[in-house]
Image 1: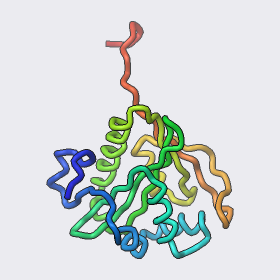
Image 2: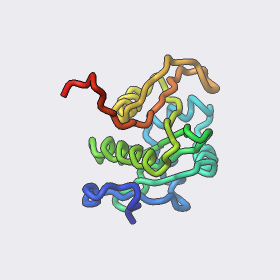
Image 3: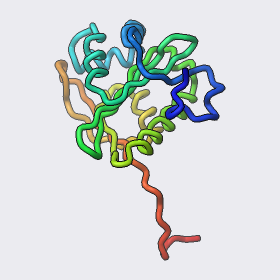
Length: 179
């Protein structure tokens, strides 16, 4: 079932759907995690049994959605508000997400855009990304993320960048704009 508030009409013909998370989704994703996601989670938590951490994250989140491809959950993502205008955002996925090619970037942009539309007071999304995760950084850059210098974090002291994705406010024309 496609989540109508998340998936743009033009994408409904694509081989995926977005829906609310169901029991078993996180277990499936945890057992099929992309190696980059597994390395990042291990660097933060120092453990390789990721399911309990993902379940806690989902329980604490305000919104948890799943990307489904061919009947299987391939990614889970969500956010948790910490202040009226700020929320932590997260995403984990299996390698099957990569089968969507660049479509997952377009889908991600649409999801972020919709979150900002629905949650009118929300001004920014943030979290941390491994300094070693260049693929994650490229994806986040495509979503408009800005990065802070890397700092050591987690049990292993690996370096992570804080990232922020800010609401794009409409540009107001002024007398100084070139027409």
